[in-house]
Length: 73
Image (cartoon, rainbow, N blue to C red):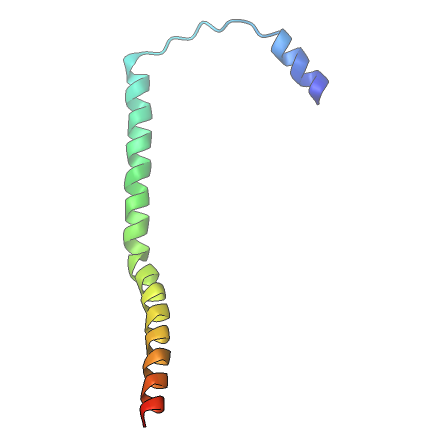
């Protein structure tokens, strides 16, 4: 594997590629589309995420409240 990598690195030939201004625009669109997709994903799962953490906090509060009431009576 190392030998193949060395051979490929040694035999690199220059590429004569043309990058027009639209290439940067395309990369920007990919980035912004990814951000929009991530925002929609978070929005769709936001209630599940908050319910998970709120339920965890409510269980802790309920345990603390019930212990306090039983020790008072």
